[in-house]
Image 1: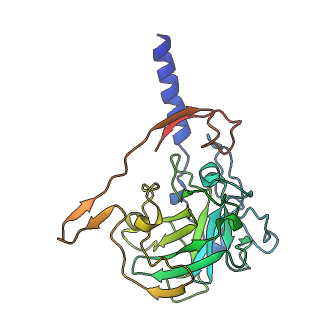
Image 2: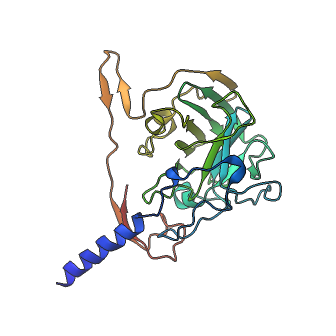
Image 3: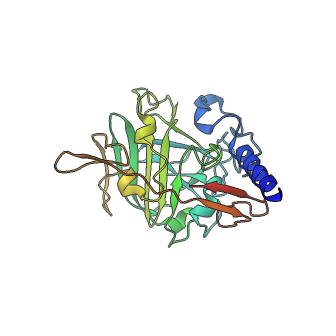
Length: 281
């Protein structure tokens, strides 16, 4: 009887932890009408770490701005930890925006940190990829990294409440559009940030969020070349996880699911003082 009661309690806990009022990817905002914080939940991972209303008063190297932009080769942001010498896997829920250009209310990526960048616009997305001295954005220099996206096991996103906007999907460069589907991989000295056109019918496929263990080369194929900075147009890739071989046969990759059930697990808990019990990919 006791084991059955425990099982019921665990199931109820898991259901409550994963059920949020509104998933992050379903929250839509205008650039000029952002709330202070878009995540008002108080679930398993606590409250949103930073804020979304960012301006000149929040622009400094301690900024907790969680609103990023991806516009061009010289105007984009990446997600990085708020504190030095951090591991992405420990801090993805608290990541803050690090940007190349002032005026966004964020932290600035230090000069010289980017050692190669390719910005590419395709019919379905824009992406920026390249090489980075990741210690300059508070990552441990040997951290293999991980993925940030607007989903997560609880649908609150990584980071919690993290928003992305872009002016790359129209001719009016003063108009910033919220990007609903995006992914950002950071680690191993490499980065890639793909933002999918919200008007496109396949945005969720091009910006898949389920292949977190196979990195940039598979999720955001491009010309990764150190010392080269270029902006170009390109064709849309196959959906991540879909590959057409030389014979024309289409193959589909499925990432193995590794269930991790844990209680008090500081490696995956950004706030280890909070008791945690969950299973996730």
